[in-house]
Length: 277
Image (cartoon, rainbow, N blue to C red; front, side):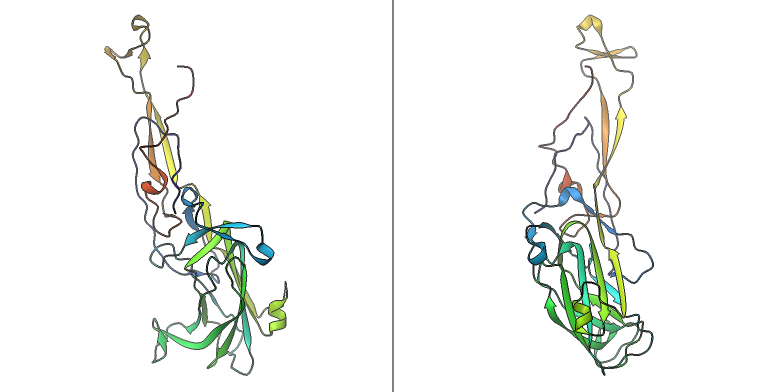
């Protein structure tokens, strides 16, 4: 569930909206700006308990959405030369500050830019992968074994899907290719290639702008019960306003663009005024 927060607001509030584009996260890219998830939307009921080395740790779930908060990841093999099926290879997925919220999902190995009868989304399938070990709910690593059906080069793409992810803050996904299971099982095995990125950053989804009231003066003659602005005396005085906007390109924990209903409840919001009155 999404959690609404109580926030300090002014006497007048206005909201804007945010939009963002979606694409799989390329771990092999030179740079990547983590996707922004509004920390106000993390729900206390949507959580995963850690298992194994994560035992005793609680992770909060975020939901992937291929049309919005796309947390699927990919990497290039980085092979120096064509690799064939003469040897087995293993792919290790490691999560930092995160765990699997659901069992590890399918992994695709494709050659972008080609298309034939074995195509998947206009990409030629050049190998198949099988979950070998790990990837259970609450764990933070999985090892896949893949069988090569034809020569693989450095441009072949390995993609791992995440329909949801459990995290306790700013998760990082690392994918590595190993020639042997022995190396894959090591804490710091020698990899053929590896790629890693922080994929999500949790930050406040609201942006507040405070505008103080101008020229309001409490009248002594009315026992300070009326306000004077210029030559006009009013029973009510505008002390100021706060304009609320949604931060640009923000998502909620359910995988869609953050909107005011996710983080602001007008009926239950508390107005707090501080200072000498």
